[in-house]
Image (cartoon, rainbow, N blue to C red; front, side, top):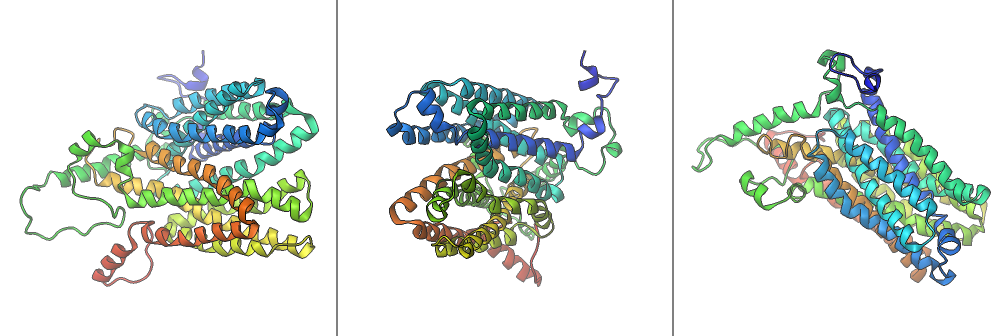
Length: 499
């Protein structure tokens, strides 16, 4: 019945070339990420109303239960991410888990729409967090499967655009729609966006599935991840076949700069003792990238709980103005694909380090904004715009670094060590956990510091955090800088190296 959509042994599906193209797959994943983050943030302005008017919560308890609903979402995301990563790396298709995640997201939205008690709202947020884990983990792994290593930074740049717009625009849209059209109109917008996402996810065809009907030449320039891994793993297998129980008298191959944390451990013992995600964390590159994403999320989301209140008290702005102040942070996200291309060409180390270093003064100097004048408003907007550039300089290269570090780890292991699909989903599960943790910590830390010590102290704390983390980012991103420098000195090389 649906041969025209899914194809058969002898007839390809309609629009096969377009539906399996890298552009369409990246666009579909970016749309999925945006939809998930939009549905998370669009109801944030609605939660207090739902608690007081629909769930019957006393006004004195609304703030407490609002925090609980935000926390349970993050908890579900944290717990679900490694599980989804393990599951996705063991399924035959990425599309199946994405569709299941879509069903969970639709169900969560329906529960939140009809929710009239705290228990129902908590269940809805838990299901929303679980669906987010599927979308992020499987979606980013699908992007890593689709593009070659030389293009992963560019691809993650477009995902970064979707992330930034989803996080920063959804509360603004939710507040405006709720104020002008009411509670159910907010969820009407949500279901309309879900409808678009349904079309894209059903239309998507993975490139490895498209190869059933298309030749490699017809597939175009886009090396398939599974084939690359097979070649790299075969090389690793051949290396492991060399005798290792006797001392070698010959010269040893110099270690590559792709994984500075690799050790000579029997892979059989590792698989018996450690889950894959713990093994991945043995790579300092991957660990540093995840920690960098955590810090970036803290810096980004700390403004959710501080900036609207600050502009309301300082500039006497209303809710719409408090939402529009996030636009200067959002607009630089358009540069994320360009930043990704720079990361592909020159490596992620210097870009991510520059982002943290630039973010420090941009945050600290916001303490100078103290009065309700045009000059002060322009200063705040300019600093927020520069901060948006800094945050994108950090996030896009570090998202690509996840793929780079997994590629390096895979090269050191025998064939099939991480299963047929590799470990990309589990690696991005770790990234998702880091981003979720940062999204929970950021509003809490920012709000508590502002409440206890004031806006100036909060900008100092967050600015110092940004500046300090530039150190480990420079040292570990792209492999240990110290070891790379030593190897280059031995070879008589100078100048920066890309990944």
